[in-house]
Amino acid sequence: MKHIIRTSQTLVFAAMVLLFSACGDPNTVSVATDSGFVPFEFIDENTGELIGFDIDLINAIAEEAGLELRINTMEFDGLIAAVHTGRHDMGIAGITITEARKEQVDFSDPYYDAGLIIAVRADNDTITSEADLAGKRVGTRSGTTSETYLRENHPDARIVAFPGIVEAYMDLTAGRVDAVLYDVPNVRYYASQSDGNGDGEQIRTIGDVLQGEQYGIVFPKGSPHVEPVNQALRTLRENGTYDEIHAKWFGEPADSE
View 1 (cartoon, rainbow, N blue to C red):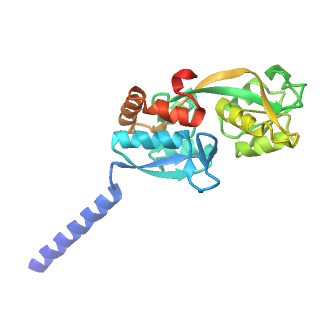
View 2: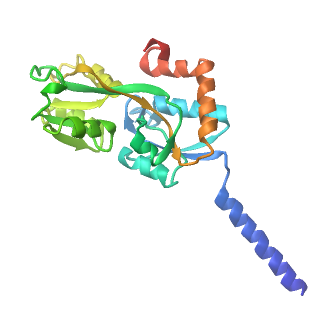
View 3: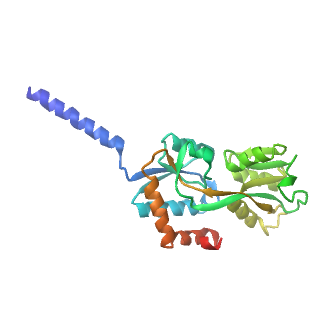
């Protein structure tokens, strides 16, 4: 009888160990992000580290909220689904808040105001606004609001969707596409980087900012992390940390936008 009792106790103990192992530390969260959206998240060529505005912000939020992060990179077009299915606890990657996405995931409060804009080669004088996109080859990134915008508003354009936005800029400078439509901060960054390189393949932005957008952090539906993250984000805005991070990556505090 004693042998049976000990065996039962051993089995219960083993089950509890497995249970706690499966649950893990509730303060450790898995974060999905991209690695090709400058200056929000990208790989530093010198160090090989993942850096950017989003990376600094999510680390500051985690410190404020008492969370430990496990950051994982993946292709953007699979990120929403990965969070929706619970593969990751949250995602940050310049993700535009939309009603369609709200059906799959929960969003944090907005943390960045953005929009879309068109880029062309500097020597292109045939495209001066979005009205000129009909019949033109227009590059963008697959799975993004910029692709959706093009398909809904410019069905006559020849849309070329790339897995990464860098490929779109490369095809633009090489003349394989006539324009690129994408998020304002990223387009302006690449336009500024192309200035003065002497290779005759500089790009510039044209027209107005299209479709005002806001970025948010995504969570599985009903996630307990939404409110702590929102509270941390509010604190970072109030104590100046958000402005410091913004100025680091965009040259000015958020209030100067």
